[in-house]
Image (cartoon, rainbow, N blue to C red):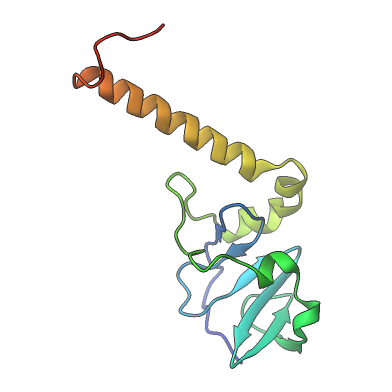
Length: 132
């Protein structure tokens, strides 16, 4: 069950969760609450490191957010890019406590709405009347 990840990997957060994954890995490798998880050969494994020390765990010991990641989890929303490993390792606890990803998703949505509105104004979209 060895995983070849030669250097500290960038991660991405799975939309709507505090589960992270390694987008550049060939296999599904997840991080949640201080542990790495991966399905392999019909079984699940857990480790404190992303590239070694994997031990078999029963499905009952996999946290629900990891076990139930959406099928399209690799579709990272725009604006939520890769996160350097060191940042995730240092901040995951405070990000979850402070609801960081909910605030970040809202910031991205507001920015996209503003961009769409400004883009529409400059290209003649809409009825020509804009509220201020």
